[in-house]
Image (cartoon, rainbow, N blue to C red; front, side):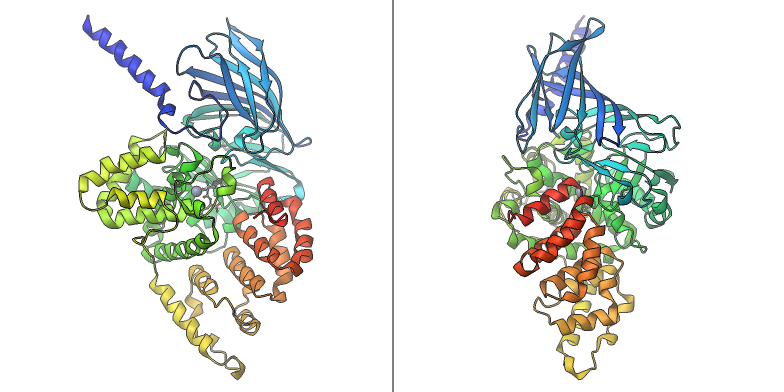
Length: 624
Ligand code: BES
Ligand code: ZN
């Protein structure tokens, strides 16, 4: 008699706490949706990819779960969508229901309010995206590697999913999804879901993502996309022109998965594939689950830039499995991921390389910190009223990573690893905000090892600007060597003709040592010295995109016109924001270079992603 009652009570409790789990956190400022009243648990997309009109057209079906009684409307996020019709499923059939699309807000988009007839469990919205969708890029054939067929892809983080589907666009909740995608027969769509590597001759594809994910991880791409398997869990998707080079460059991806599983527990997403995008992809990588999106600019031929893969893979734990509940908490995604990335690099490529990568990141963070507004140097940043993209910086990444390195130092690797592994398990397929994390850290680490770290120290890391005095300060012995060679060369008399450069053992230098060398040349280095370096090492012509970036940037700052042609080529052929934005910034600092820069931008802009265009337009307008 008692047992069934207990069971029913337990069930009610479980479903109550599940349905309200999104409510434990600070409200996400960046959504209009009423996710605290009713949530979508599953969506079914049915979309045509129309390359001619640059639109996705079709419908999205939402399966709903209510947090409490009396909910009469469903509020979704949209931006620049045309909404044609909304239906509710009742009494076994779809019937029209009313909706209202509000005026567009520059940051949040347009709130879509749908009237929910009583007990509606399913709602379907018929819509299309517009060519200017902030989360989609439509490339003409000329912008691809093959030059013959068009290409499109989505980039939804942070709040761009709403520009291609009406959805509750907040990382505080999760959906599983299915999609039926229709495209031209010679173009293959793929999604951040279970992917069937076979080409479907009829152009109709079905995708399923059974694990619940936050909406910013729903992703789609289509183009002349081919497939090459690398190992039991990994494969490359890309245009055929890049397939072999990418597979050779990223062959260690399986070893990275194995190493991460040993440290932080099972990889929970079955396969891990990489989609190599055309060079206009605005990021280095994007951790879309099961299918990270990757810039081709890291295919260097020598695996020197594969920490990017370690990073996107690391998100399969930090970010995709345990997600920041609001965009204020981005450091919980990116800081943890930068830390895990570096641990993976240490496991697979050794301590020396991992430490060099730490030291480079630490150096660039220090340079960035003095430039940023004070408030933006805080991990738990305030971004109400701002687009999360505008607050983007190295702070959540490297300051976040340094905080975890600090904890590792104090508690010891063994205890810290155990803590992190348990953290991922305890929050798997959930979200967390900074306040809950701090509480969890206190209970599970700080209180268990009394006297090692104080709450005041934790608060300083999370809530205060700049870096605490107790921050780790990674340095690399290899870099110390590079520095002493550099100094002895610089102390030679340049006019003597005996330049001494040939004495530096650069033959054995890694890309990281080169980056350190270039980044640490004196800020006022003479053109003579720069040209001496260039004639010896051909840096302007470097095919390593990171080295080329560092070198071009230094030469812009020193007004060296020798690089101009290469600079123009670089900026026109690459759309990755991290590589081009600093170049535009440096160029625009000198008024006399404005016409030159404008000329490059006129040529480059049509090939850039809308996000990159937005950032650089703002630079020209003097907004940043
Ligand atoms: N998730 C990010 C990209 C991102 C962050 C997009 C915030 C939109 C908003 C991705 O994992 C990332 O961090 N990419 C980095 C690479 C990394 C090695 C630091 C990038 O694109 O440069
Ligand atoms: Zn990341």
